[in-house]
Image (cartoon, rainbow, N blue to C red; front, side):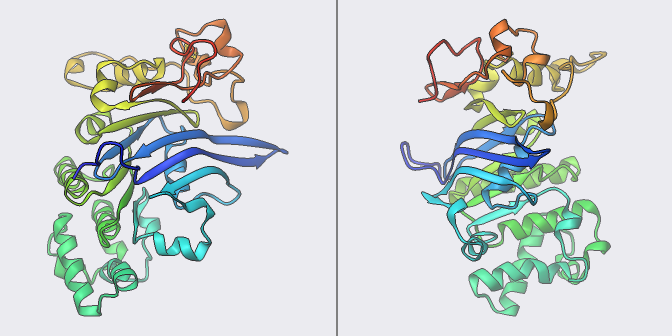
Length: 332
Ligand code: SF4
């Protein structure tokens, strides 16, 4: 079920920002992101480690590190989640919004059987009885590729491999049939076969049940397979966003082009070395005053060091780069 044209998005990030107070000043870790995730569609966020992708996703449910100062709006079907009380937000987490984050070991309670943990949201949010929730968990475990799901129900987290724990987390995230799924590198710990199975499951759920998906990955192969729309993040900024086919056919931002050149693909088979983007993402304490990519950009001009470019949007394709953005133009 794809989103109807013109329908309000399931999730809208409206000027989302995250700051931290350090050394007496405010440091911007996420800077004014505007992004829509329609029902029945998958929006991928890509970028190097430290670009703010995970922090942006965690901000949706206010699961940010202590001291984070959130700004802007996070609209779930028009309701601003940043304005909800902690109690109201607890009813959203795990029910209307499912989450799969990295580090499955730290996300699971070590002293509870994994089956009981997976059954908890079904009992809490859907009011299922113990036996019904157990049957549903066994079905979900089987769906995410956990062998012998009946007996695995009784295991504790330490008895499972990292990949198996991650599959438990995925089952828990999908348990209540969420309208939005936040998936942060959900298949990194899994082998290629299981990864393919999980990605098909997420895509199928999205299409069949209208689930919106915000999917974070650094793997452009996964992006090409999964995404309807892609957002490219750099140093806390969304520097480019576009429908997936358009982005791959015509990447406009030098950072996006660098990521694509550095990604292994069919053309690179047999190549001695892939090109890399020189340098690294600047730390929060040393952000350049202009375009944050300027120190690494082969196409930088003098004005790039002076001011960060606003995003220019034409059709569904937006890019924040002085090569594209002309004087006086801003985001509509
Ligand atoms: Fe490169 Fe300038 Fe574009 Fe930044 S604004 S990506 S420095 S050309």
